[in-house]
Length: 256
Ligand SMILES: O=C(O)[C@H](O)COP(=O)(O)O
Image (cartoon, rainbow, N blue to C red; front, side):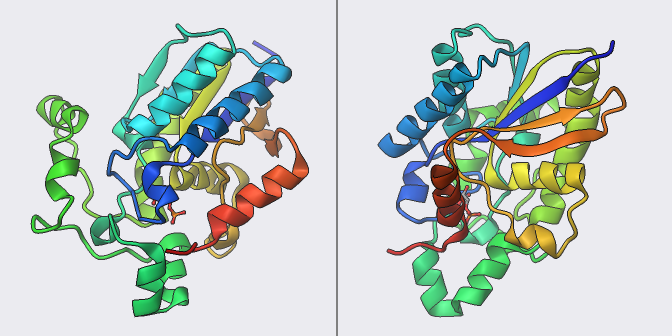
C-alpha cells in the first residue's frame, strides 16, 4: 500500500514522583494533577489536528495508561485497541529509583547525576533485594503475570543502551509490521523509550543523544515512506514556547 505512514508518539504526563523530583523508572507512580492536565492538552492537540488511530502501544506502567486513556477518550476513540509491553517501560533506574535528584546532585555532583540521566551507556548502580522499592517493582501484578508466561529476563538497572536493546526489537517486530499495513499508530511511552526510538530512527550519535530531552504530554509525529525511511522527523505539535519550556523542564535536574 502507498501513502503517508504516520506515527504519533508522546511521553506520559508528569507523574507524582517526577513532581517530587524523584527517580521513578519501573516504580508505578500515578500521574500528578499537572500530569493529568498535560495528558488532556496532548489529547486536545491531537483532536485539533484531527488525528485518529488504528492501534496504540504503551508500557505496563499506570502513568502511561492514564495518559493514553485521557487521549483516547478525548479524541473519541475510547475503544482503540491497545497493546502493552514491558519493553516499552521506562528504563529501569536501578538503585537510583526513589532517590531525590537534587539530593543526589549535592552528594555526587550535578555532572554525575546528568551522566546517570542522559549518557548513552553509563549504568546506574544495580537495584538489589535490599532496595526499598524492590518488592514494589517485582510484585507489580503485571510483572508477576508476565514472569509466569515468559522466560525473558528483566533488568535490574539500565542505561539508554540497554533500553534500546529491548525497545528496538519490539519496534521492528511488533509495531513496524502494522505501520507497513497502513495502520495509524500511537505510542504513549516514557522519556528513555522515546529517546531510544529517536536515536534509532534519526541515527543520532551516542554523543548527541545526551542532549535530547522529551517533554511530557506533547505529541510528536514521524512520517515514513513505504520502505519505512523517515520522511519527516520528530515534529512536535502545538505552541513553540510550551514545547521549549517542556524540553527545558525535562533536561533540568530540578530542586527539592
Ligand atoms: O523515570 C523517571 O524518573 C522519569 O521518567 C524520567 O527521569 P529523567 O528525566 O531524570 O530521566
